[in-house]
Length: 345
Image 1 (cartoon, rainbow, N blue to C red):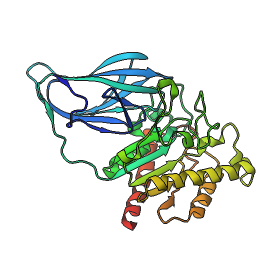
Image 2 (image 1 turned 180 degrees about the horizontal axis):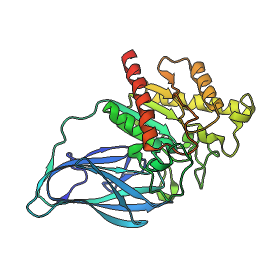
Image 3 (image 1 turned 60 degrees about the vertical axis):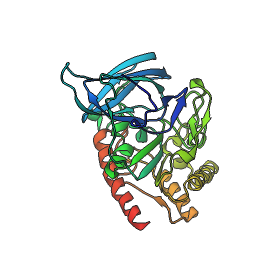
Image 4 (image 1 turned 90 degrees about the vertical axis):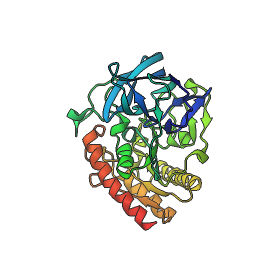
């Protein structure tokens, strides 16, 4: 049985581009969830690679799975393959593990049983949106042997948005998430590590697709998803190629950054007039002047719904990316803080 990918019993979450009625997953943590009765489920995925090796992820009946995608073209992913006569209920959550180092276009879903799809009970009410960098995307999060250390050499195999503090926090809160995060992204275009065109979050935050190499740049329709909690976790990558905030916190570039950061936050507040907005960085090592600057912007904005959050080990826990165990700790702190915010509103 071939399933219409727009069947109402399929649930999606994330900024998804529908090309010719087929969904394209762009950002990390974007997902497809479905329940079905049967013994076999195969999902066909067309990969569009920019860099790294590219992997897809799935939670199948509570067990996490990882699938290597072809660099280009279609890969058939066998999500469930039970023996004949072993038909049963299955719960599947298929998701994008990595950031915009690639795009995934879902080409088809085939189930072994006719009309095997089932309704998914309930649904999350709280909605979170995260604007972040590689830490928020879960980059290199599976390299647990390197907790507290620099990253190992890798080709994308350790990156998994499921283990990002962002998605862990959403799960702890029973919330939906749009994870608008990209490895290397700064706030200001021209800084950071995102090659080849060095965009900043000020460029991509309102885009559905921002990589012209993958197709036409498209704006995001904010009416499709209204956030209750907005997390802004950018700034650390603006220290490259020069850490102007660490070197000259009262200098011209620092003043420019703080002004543009404030303008960015005000734009988000305009899109989500009822949302609480949390400004933060992460526990990955960086100069404390970045957090001081964010605190100054927050104070200047003087909005009851714009908060500055600082982790206990902010900017000093690890020189490498955040591993799954470290992300779990971060998510615990952040979840407690968000619960407090929800009681204030």
